[in-house]
Amino acid sequence: MDAEVFARRRAAFLSRIGMDSAAVLAAAPTRRRSRDVAYPYRQDSDFYYLTGFPEPDAVAVFVPGRKKGEFVLFCREYDPQKALWEGRHAGLKGARKQYGADEAYSIEELDKMMPELLADRRRLHCGLGRDGEFDRRLLGWIDEVKKRSRAGVRAPEELVDFDRVLHEMRLIKGPEELAAMRRAAEISARAHERAMRVCRPGMYEYQIEAEIVHEFMRQGARSPAYPSIVASGDNACVLHYTANDSCLKDGDLILIDAGAEYDCYAADITRTFPVNGRFSPPQRALYELVLEAQLAAIDKVKPGNHWNEPHEAAVRVLTKGLIRLGLLDGRLSRLIKKEAYKDFYMHRTGHWLGMDVHDVGDYKVDGQWRELQPGMVLTVEPGLYIGKGNKNVSKRWRGIGIRIEDDVLVTETGCEVLTAAVPKTIAEIEALMETARENL
Ligand SMILES: [Mn+2]
Image (cartoon, rainbow, N blue to C red; front, side):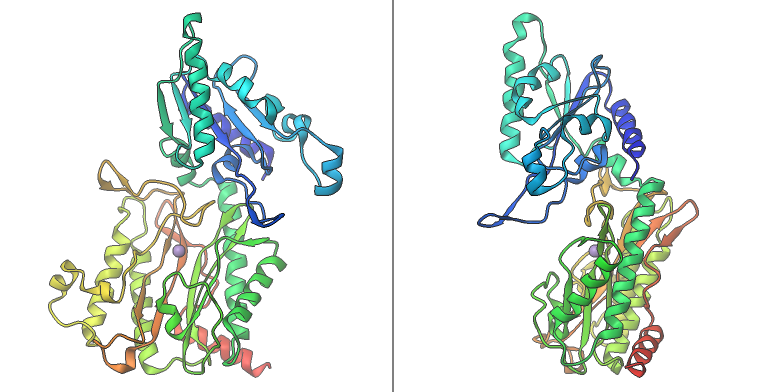
């Protein structure tokens, strides 16, 4: 993304927080995996959204109206030895030239400079509760400002969580963000298609996972947005299954929930298909039902509808279908009211999607479900899960877990499914798998 995009976001953020405020954002820390090996680094989403700065050991401070500069970036100084061993880093000059900081200081100067930057700012926007160590330092700086009160300086008296301004900005996606999300969606769609093509009984779930990650990287997404779920048979009924180590059995379904991260933006797709390429009659019946629920939910994604409408639509279709199939017994309205569907559908129908897979943004405003607006992106992902051990239902339904998930953008007139390229109907899936087997 261009430096100018981040500059525009900063300008919008500064004007929204106002002249009597300041904001402090910390870069994500590096995390140790084992001994002297670190996990791959991923920048904090809020920090990246406003700075585009990809390094750890950095703190961004925003001070609207400050004469010497409104955007101050503390980061690592350039070190030729570090460059030799670990690679590129911006240094103070790069922080100004490449990343548009008005002033850049060594991260070592942070404690010394913060009290001055926070002086006479009534409100402080920050990410309290994320990192206890950083919180303690922040409160220390405020305390330092207070000590200067006899010199006529006032300390911040109100701490505001990023939810209030920054996360509201992140909830509505701009054109550059949508371009990144479309790319993430496209790459993820190809990976799911690849999984359908290569899948055979006798393979292991992790071998399918390898195909997915392979396609992500081949297409320029360096990482999944979250650990991929590759769950065959009864494993699909474990909602956050990530062991991915079972052998694929002829006659089972396989549920794959996987999405790529591209330029810090996530895709989140789930598809469920038969290991051997053909749905059995009970699998078919349940799959058709989940698909009908998903389409009904997507139909409710439009400006002016509230957040919960897609969920309500999915619940209605699923409950009706469960009665039809003999899995629930009773009157529709009553079964919905007492949430009888929760035996088979225990999660909600979606979440916001963006830089984080479960993205920021409130779902309720003043106690009411929020209205959908153009530029919001959400997932729509109903499912049905009937465990192997569920003795309350006929045997034919057991050991089946199905979820169908797409990423949906709210547009001016309705919605657009960003992940529509992955086969979804039974006919499409069976045709693709059939062709793949013929070409073996
Ligand atoms: Mn999801």
